[in-house]
Length: 113
Length: 113
Image (cartoon, rainbow over the protein chains, first blue to last red):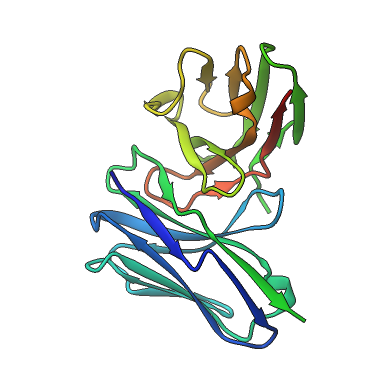
């Protein structure tokens, strides 16, 4: 059974810092990996999708990398801002797509003004 | 911008009562998912539809939960009877087809008292 682990569980940094969130998964036979943001009491906002054949994806200040063979992904946030404060969730999908997404528990990020 | 619509946003119900949630996916999205998220955890898949057909409901507690997507568009998730342990956020998501980017709604926060 696929398991997804996110480290750290919580992170608090001053505004302006660059930071890295980590995600690992136990079964490397994934089809894609997706990073989401979740604000308190709200739904999930898709940030980046990386196909298994890709190494990284970028969107604005966000960069996500994927090392499928080692079962790892990182989300890099450049020049962090207070508005980046949220929970960040990593999710993987296996080929065939019949199992939906398997999520980690998330990293709760606080950016201090 | 197209969004996944869910209603209601919040629901309080008494134990043993019936409750229903509605989801309208992004137009043209063939794949629809229902997830349950307990506070502090990542979402877990309950049921996945491809058009009007169920492709995975292995994690759906079928003694009390039911889901349908009769015309392959909007969907309803029902719980009868509700139990205290059902208190959670119920999230609906859709994607153009399996193994593509998933988009989530704002969720329904259920409290069973």
